[in-house]
Length: 346
Image 1: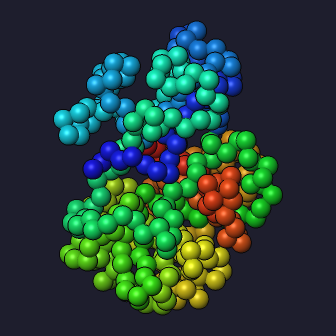
Image 2 (image 1 turned 45 degrees about the horizontal axis):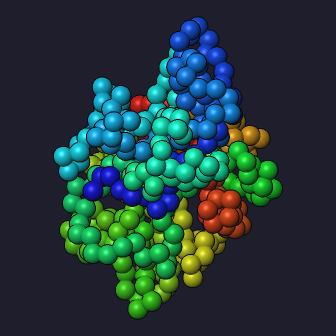
Image 3 (image 1 turned 90 degrees about the vertical axis):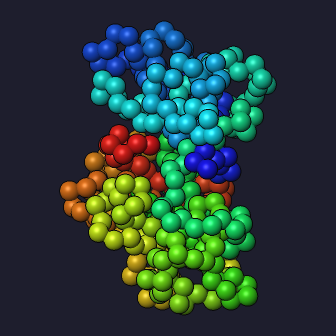
């Protein structure tokens, strides 16, 4: 199903508009700021300090709900005979607009006394649009095996303003983020190799996940029971192949041992020769602010695909593998290239 109830992303939250700023040469629209996000809204529609529900990009809003009918004139996707509008990045008068804000009062089913930051995704019954997994995706045989690794999803930097000083106190390095299909390969407690996509375990067979493993046997050759390696599968037939690759390949971004993230300098001890498939480190200085983190990846070129193509962004990894509660007990966060999102959706 391309509409999923994501248990990681906070797609809809109660927020306060922190600032409203003009847009040069625009009389009817202004930019409203929520956390680290900017949303273009009609002038006079909102005020600073107003409580709103903020919907992040990728949220699928059902057009059967009268409150979202106004989005029906825009692009929609139909799933199980229900039409949805999926929120994407836009650019209006030179300003990136990401997500949607609506007055909290428009949602009487919510407690109007909810604190800023409250997650109301489940209360509103919302899900995330997820692109169909690759052709030949295989049969789902069970849930993601979370006893070996966490699901793959790093927090976006726009959501980290309030904890930025905590993050800055640690040492980080950046790797290129690639736009593909998430795959996790594990050797379970019985020594058997098992394969997962973003949310499900995939049965062994003639499908993209297992075919990649057959070609890149080094991914699991050195794993011992309890180990896991996580990668993004990229190439033809996956997400429209934005990097212009000629074959499907894995790009490793995380390694786990005993349910702990392994430091990159120790990866060879767990995955051996598969270390050569690692996501490339990008030589970027650690940004002073979240705004700088976004600016430094805008129009960033890839070193994974064809050189004229843009990178999706970067993932910043804790150099010692420490997980932080501020990051949802993860050791990574990400900055996405807004120019890339405009071209490829997101």
